[in-house]
Image 1 (cartoon, rainbow, N blue to C red):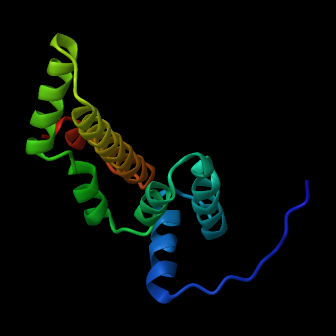
Image 2: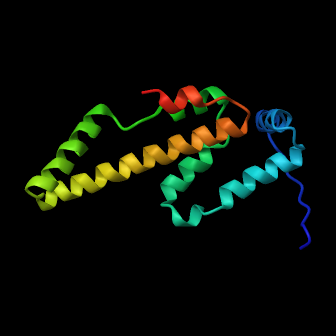
Image 3: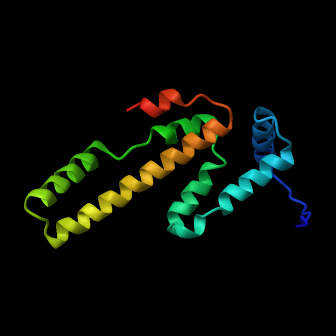
Length: 137
């Protein structure tokens, strides 16, 4: 398969970001940018547009911003509400309204987990130890 050459003009901050990533991962700038493009293109069609966009947006965050994203979780209030609905569903069933609320909370939880995982993956890819972020609450 032949490759297609393109010219890409990057703003200085984005160029510096990818240059630093390339240096940390011991890859060429071209390989680093190609990896970013490939990861954005992979399986994003299966995700809702807003979630795919949020995942794509993580690519350009600084390491500190990614650490914050990796600590992001469903709010305590939402977790408690979801847990209560799950218990109620098992014991007595849910009303239509409660089922809708439960589905929304599950979607929010799934989104938070996916964004956290992607932020952790990016940090790991950039050469950072993410072990403390895996266990942080």
